[in-house]
View: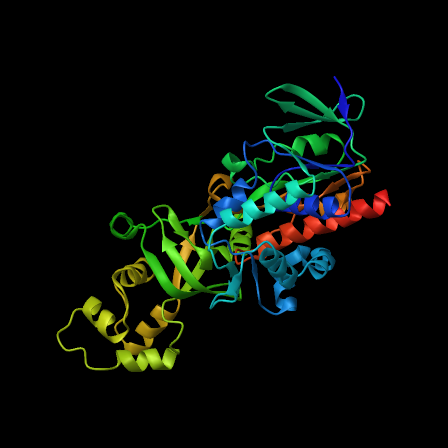
Length: 403
């Protein structure tokens, strides 16, 4: 079997891998990308269904803080390829961007396909060889990269390798974590995969579930252990999900892992102070039912009234101050975390301690980028930004190694 010898092999055709390939090929290196799926960027296209939130425009220090414990390790890479750099890159591909009211950055097309098409055209123009349906299976006895393809096995002996194989969420789009045992066998530490940006289970009453599953809670504030998240949530048959929930998912998941449950407080009227809300509820109620009164005086929707009863029981307090307090802090007990098959992203993966920069200590000449690494972040542009930034960093590290 002949052995192919590009300068660099990039294994994985998602944002991190394609960005690495772009940087390397622009520097004049021969680059071959290997992707096991029939097309490139499948998870990237899935992200585009929500408008393709590329990055976020918030203050950089706050931005770095979104990555939690991994923030300081990621900081140099985020500084070297900033949200402004990512925005300029997209616009350089002909995709104008805009900043939404929440500070999130989107392409004006609000989808990924035009950007991906322009990106692939650029890569092909720079001579990148795009190999699809090529599944990496590890290394041969001779130390070459081994791939299974529809045409049979292939062996590749690059001068350097970048692995950008994704995490373990959205397996049907290509991120299945199958690489983990291959790297563990080489002596690299791999942390167990865990769900991130995911929904949580709780015991709704059958009546509430049947009536409100699929209904949104709009503009609420969720609180857990001092962390607050504003936005929307969605009542699901199994529990609660949505952007405001995902922002707290790491802390909620860890608490459930440790204690078996986590109590999330929901402020149904975050734009009103406790005193303002109590004043509204102090007006004469007359003969109205409590539900009618809550709809008129506090402008609560049917799903919010139902959630209030789920949290506090059917016997809600009627005193204005106590009722206002109940609305401002409705406790919901979460009892389970949804699995990786329902997660937007994942925690776990290749330990950052297994790396020298982005080079595998256990396999010199092999670099890693993207969601393979053990970091996590909420939705809001942070996931894509770190994938792009680590892809750029890995490419620059390869160029430095190759001189």
